[in-house]
Image 1 (tube, rainbow, N blue to C red):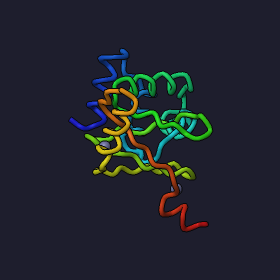
Image 2 (cartoon, rainbow, N blue to C red):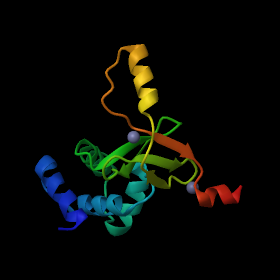
Image 3 (cartoon, rainbow, N blue to C red):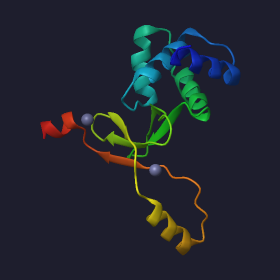
Image 4 (cartoon, rainbow, N blue to C red):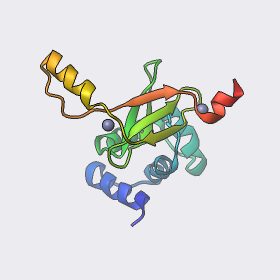
Length: 142
Ligand SMILES: [Zn+2]
Ligand SMILES: [Zn+2]
């Protein structure tokens, strides 16, 4: 089973019928290495499926995010973008200029988490790290 088929199967279990627009959205999200806003998804998926509706895009992204297949990425301006979820425990780097996303693994947050936990009384169970900056291509242009 391809990743696209597997996403569609999950989507079907959660949200009902698989339609042409939903399939186009899933194909786009599986293959994109850039974080996309709902409007980006709408514009790009419309190329494949001209009758795409923006409401369908929002609803489908919401379901995919509930399923943990895409991650909601927070931008500085308060907008949300969406990105294929990491495989396993990885951390996200994201370009503030073009939205290109990459993952890295390995961190040594344990001493920090232990200290914060002690100071705050929080029992910390997981973390999600997101680094913002400029990707190699955008960095070169400046
Ligand atoms: Zn960039
Ligand atoms: Zn980590």
